[in-house]
Image (tube, rainbow, N blue to C red; front, top):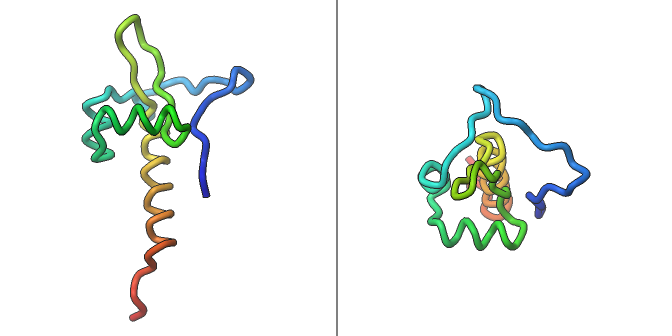
Length: 86
């Protein structure tokens, strides 16, 4: 269950809305528990959402894409280590 998080030039870009804000790096680090180097390494490998270029020196991630990545990680973790039977 490996998902690619890159956007091709053929895929329409998701636009940020008030319900789907753009998160800056410190927020992404806080939500994921990863640091900058790990995030960009995973982006390069296609295993983390690609940041959106906001300006010359600014980028961010759609909140929905980060939430989906976290949900995917939970699903992978749970499938490897299922909870003990009751």
